[in-house]
Amino acid sequence: MKQSGMNKVKTLPLSWLIRTVLSITAISLLCSVVIPVHALTLYVDPDTEQVYTTPGKNRVKLGKFKQVNEAGNTQSPEEAKAVENKLDEKLDELKAVEARIEEHQKIIQETAQQNQLAAAEKASSKSDEKKWYDRIKIGGYTQFRQGAGLSGDFAGLASPGDKAIEKDTNFFIRRARLVFQGDVSDHLKLYMQTEFAGGTVGVRDMYGDIYFDKKKEFRIRPGLSKIPNSFELLQSSRDRLALERADALSSGVRNERDTGIFFYWTPQHIQKRFSYLRSNLKGSGDYGVIGFGAYTGQGINQRDKNDNVHIAARVTYPFQFSNGQIFETGVYGFTGKFVPRVGTNTAAGILDAPTFNKKGYRDERIGVHAILYPQPFGFQSEWNWGRSPQLSADRTQIESGTINGGYVQAMYKIDNSWGTWIPYVKWQKYNGAEKDTTNTPFSRVRETEVGLEWQVNKQIELVAAYSNMDRTNVKTLKHVKNANIMRFQLQWRY
Image 1: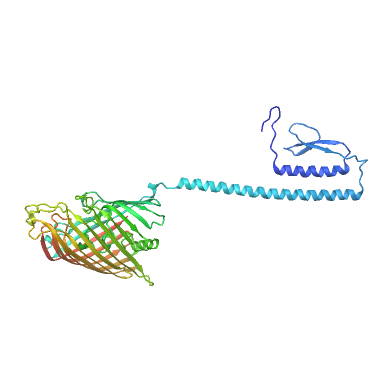
Image 2: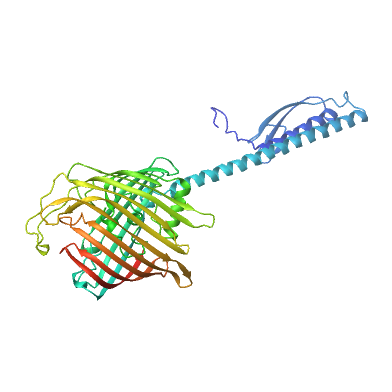
């Protein structure tokens, strides 16, 4: 520090000060025995630690020390010994103080080092903290197919769910999906899926999951997403065994999605179970133990046409037994009014567009599902019943009709050094309208599919499937019986 008219004074180290005090104490005690009587002023050089009796450059004054008259203050040997003992005691006390001070200094230094390290780690963690867009993951899958008719009227066959089942079609990209998803925070997850197959680019999903709690047990999902519906409609096509969903279910919500808002509740331990099933046993994913909400009801990427929403609800639960076997069962339903799309169809003999109610027709269903996951044997079945708008028998108007149908499926999972093999057989039935097709025509479906899926690894799957089909061609309204086809699919994930 600086003072006016005075030289700069250096701060003395604590250890040096202690040694100096010890020296002065020793000198004082000795002076009481041997030094002549008069007062001495002592000075010290902080750099050399040398003690002086006169002032000088870089010397710091320590104080005055009274000297003892040697002649008049002679002491007996006993008194000198007592002084010597007292000196030793003082020296011991000062050394103990020095040791304690050094110990405290060591603790202070260690604490300072720990604080510096913690501060550095905190600064590092802040610099390494990811922005929300750094937590977005990109993935997806592509399905490449090839099909061939074996016998029957394959040329007259068509399926709303698989455009590869048409004449003059060979190689076909059935799906090409790209997914962007990630947790923006503990309370918000974003999900977007696009479709590149079919020569056009479209949005399949675009929603945000808003969580009420950090356990993520309660959430709402506004946007374009899958409807809480049947198991097979919620199960991703990348995980499903059969090449397409059953008509009896997909006819209720074609493309499985619509725009709306839904609430989901999933206890934390069931979240883990759903995740395990999705990753290992072809589960549907987490769409809540309880899920319900409202949506437009007109289909994917379609605007509402009657200012009337559909209401949907679903309850499901995956039970796990003591042997590890998991069995899931549940019920779902939806209701609302659907406005059909009408028009002429010369191939079906419809020269004038059918008349219809522009406010829509009752569109409602209730369904049940049961899944015994393949561990290694598995069984899966769903069925639904309801009402839907339907083309009249004379093809002149749209009226209300009934629907019913479902499927049963058996499979067996085999794991070996070549990968995972799952042979399966599926039979489906449907009697009802295809409401998303122009003029909502009636469709009758009876189909048996026998296939084998080979999961080479997590990224690559091969499927070979034979199908015997008995179904209505909803474009020509002609019914095709006993058509036999063979299809192959290569799927890769990324």
